[in-house]
Length: 200
Image (cartoon, rainbow, N blue to C red; front, side, top):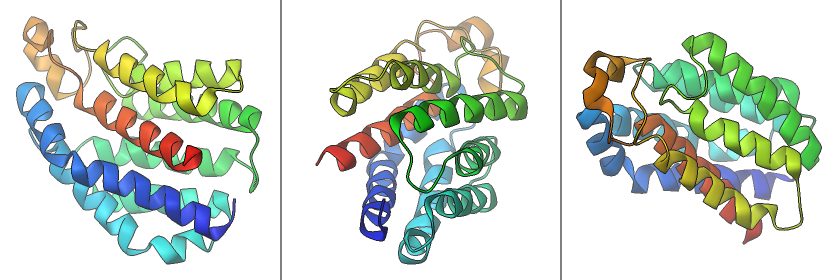
């Protein structure tokens, strides 16, 4: 986990969000405030601008810095939730993590996001992607890097038939059914970007 790899991962995450910002906006226009794409773009542009400095730090510190930046730069609910996710991962992970470390840290980070968002799995949020990812990490396996994107993207798709009970989308009630959750989609984009960068 050297500086070059950390920078590669940062750039991969930022590039994925920037490339799909319009898509995230459209998803959020259907069931939210319509600002998820713009907010996430702003946050990851700020992270990308400091990529060299962040990558030079040990992994725990780098993750905490990303989390802090997202809290400050991403508006709405997404900033605190993604900030909590990255800061919790930074708190839990050692500088050179194993797959088991990642599974354990993600489990702890999920609990932190649940507490921050007062939400649970199955409520049409980013948790509905993070949960299945954590299960897959805990199961392990040699093909993990190629399997995780399918898990993440499938989990995001699976939010479409759910009725939102948390966040702005919950005000729509039954009308939220049939739309993919934007937070689930952005979580899947980030997970896919990380796996592709590691596997490349």
